[in-house]
Amino acid sequence: MDKPKKEPVILNQTQDSKLCLNCGFPNRNTDSQCMYCRTSLTTDNGLFNWICQTYYILRWRWELKQERDSREKKLLIYRSFVFFILGVTLSVTGIFVFISSISQNSFSNGLIALLLIGYGYVTLKKIFSSD
Ligand SMILES: [Zn+2]
Image (tube, rainbow, N blue to C red; front, side, top):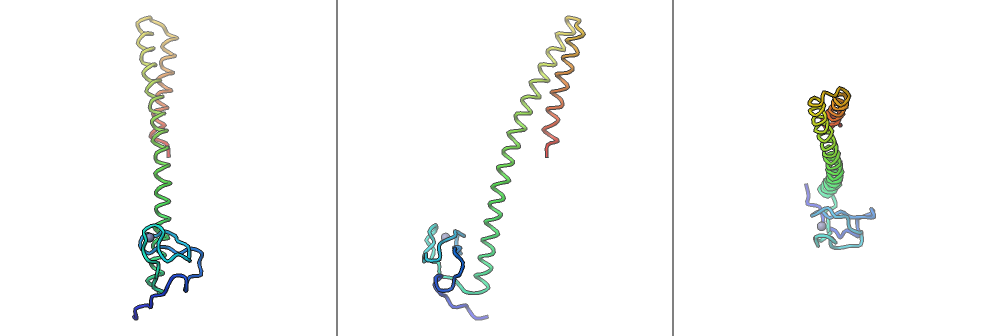
């Protein structure tokens, strides 16, 4: 296979942006240097160029997806944290009310305590069943 002849970007590009083959930054067609890393934007007009462009487009999409995933993960962690605090607070309050209801022989307080513990348990369970 012959080594493809190097040509300035402006002569062989019909797209409105030109990906830098060093860092993947999309530059204007009229640029002769990458705006981001200052690499010369002359390019091989062939299969290698096409592979590089495809690779960078895929890599950019992948990085965007990673960013979105990590944002969703952070939200999920925050949500789990709120549920955890709520669940623990409900459970601990329930246990305290339950202990005091035993010492006071109070049946209604015991029911309230069981209700609180139940809510606390359901809240804590939500952390592990959220998809
Ligand atoms: Zn660059």
